[in-house]
Amino acid sequence: MRMPRLRSTLSALAALAALAAGTTHAEEKPLWEVGLGAGFLVFNDYRGAATTHVYPVPVPYLIYRGKFLKSDRDGLRGLFLNQDRVELSLSVNATAPVRNDSARHGMPDLRSTVEVGPQLNVHLWRSADQRVKLDLRLPLRTALTLQAAPHYVGVFIEPHLALDLAQFQGDDGWKLGLLAGPLFADRRYDDYFYTVAPQFAAADRPAYTAHGGYAGSEALAALTRRYPRFWVGAYLRHDSLAGASFENSPLVRRDSYWSAGFGVAWLIRQSDRLVESDD
Image 1 (cartoon, one colour):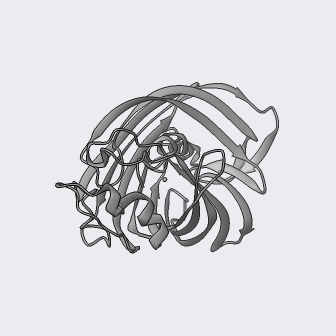
Image 2: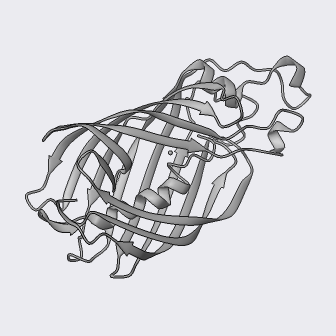
């Protein structure tokens, strides 16, 4: 990952490549693999916006199988605690800038943000052959604007259940990832995206103050496949703002919408060093 959040946009394509690393048992694989490709994204300017755009994007492919740093089906993460049932890692996300949105005419543009924080992963269930995995993931991230003097935006919490169905058509088959859960944000975070200060009020946009709290829900499905020399992946995401604490903001023009993406990446290089991996 949310305006267009990278969880559902750029990172949704980059991190989806990790699903292609699934195996049924531990085996030796390259320490790292690097590739690059291209794709497209379709998403709203921000959650609740009425405006939708299609963007061409580069698609990086990065697999790293280190002991303390990994890039796999869960994205890029640092491992601080790795037990059979519980894993503590680093969660990173971002949002893109929003300019000239119809609902925000006359208001300041929204700057890009980066979100960083811990993520607790609880491994709820694994099938005997490791093809099916169910996790509870609990990321908590602090958001900052990307500008000369970074500005603190707030805190975003994204608990969700994640179900991975790996290699359900053979060892080189398609991989399916599903996740769903509620979203929460503090007052400052929602204020950045949904408050309308009195000086920006208009006939069709009354003043509004966001208070933080429940921020709606998300559901995402991702499908990927790794071929010998390239990777292909796609995702489809649904967001619902029904019951969100900022649902009545005049900047919210849709309380339910879809976003999607598709990408292809070609393998450029891989490590000669092999490490044991059960990803």
